[in-house]
Length: 285
Image (cartoon, rainbow, N blue to C red):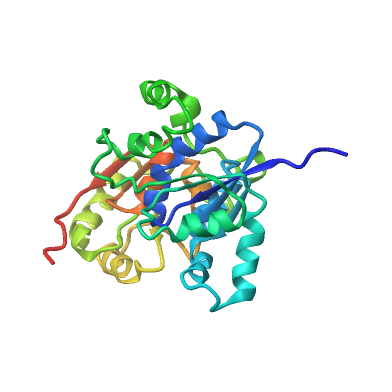
């Protein structure tokens, strides 16, 4: 009878752009514990993308862990989470555990070997967030070796790659492809519609045979409409209503990405797409 694989639990409460910054650390875990399956509890769509790219083996939404906040309030749901945890023998949580709630639940599930530390911990020595995620793994691995190799070790910092069944474009848009994300999670980070329209017009004049597409996320409707109003008589496409896996399929074929300081920009960089980012002012509040 074959032995069941060991499992390592990864807990990440951040947005998907923050989660992507942990990718080299996830690869360190895979290299350090090659016999383990990695189970992700974090941003739901990012988890689906990491599974699709074979970076982790299973994915669950971090929101499901909210039932663990108060004991006895939702016993059936808490038991479902515990049943997943009981399959693991290690856990890494990139978050604070000041009250010991997480360790308490993991202990109940039989996990004694765990790390909880936020990448924003001021006592961490490294400055770049990629390195800070790896530094947190120090109790388990020789992080100095990995940190020295982050810039040159493509196994750790190489681009996301989808398997062949996801490698083709999901619609008949032809390459070469330029993707623009004119929105952002904060309107204060967004460049003006006039600037975006001038970028599209300039690209169309410089590369008349290239396909230009605007990405419209759930919160980007107004941003895209404002740019569209300034682009009459110009040919371009719009990618809308897509999840991260679908957007990733387009990014994998893009020759250029232009966007703001947003999660999609992190995603484009993770796929190795040459990217130009427009950084606007921070929300004054």
